[in-house]
Length: 317
Figure 1 (cartoon, rainbow, N blue to C red):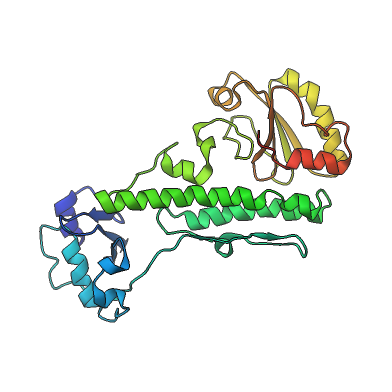
Figure 2: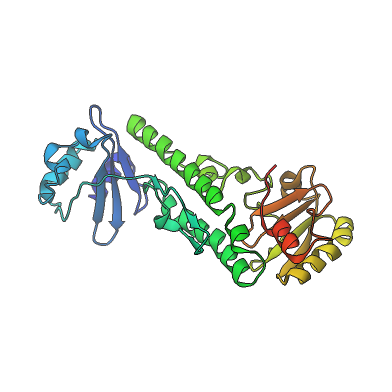
């Protein structure tokens, strides 16, 4: 099978590659090599709706795997017949879903949903696990903030649902658009740095600009505090001016902190900060404050709860 595919596509295709076909008059079909030694393959035919699939398949009659193999071969635009040497092991009819819970949090008793309990996504793009890990990262520091007494439950959970629902929506929009592309042309976006795939996964910050409510872009010299908050300042002069008040506030709260100075001459730093020179990040690297030179209101002179909310909770402009 591998040699047949390589004769059609090209001899340099690596093992494990996915082969995509769009035969005139047929729906897109794909074949993946799963195991190079045993030549184990997984194939799929993408139908727009269940009504477009063979009636016996959409009705759930999936016991005849050899019949499904013939359907897959017919949908693939191969110049050679697959021959009798292929053995069909299993087939099934599957419908993808994109679902999102109506409510993710309850304040009393405190409870929150994350991962597949909160949302489902089609496997296109592999977003399900990624978004679930993002949920866990966002929820984890909030639970730590409650247990350590930094934030009250209402404050800690505020913004969680809206923030993570937005992340799910970005990925879902990408999945819908890529499925439409797949059905019309048989191809998908290859991704790439700063492209539609990465933007769906991480948000607009993939362009290198720092934004409140999104992860801080990777910057030389910025080592973030994963257990607490981080002050990132452009230039040692500003760092000397604001770092004492920042550390004093963190001491009042009892939260781990880190302060780091980055070089504004670095291209990545200049692109990230623009006219700003100061950013604060919460434990999951999301920016909660961005300014030209000042700490958030309440950090220097507020009580511990006021300072904690100012440092940990995003307030988008």
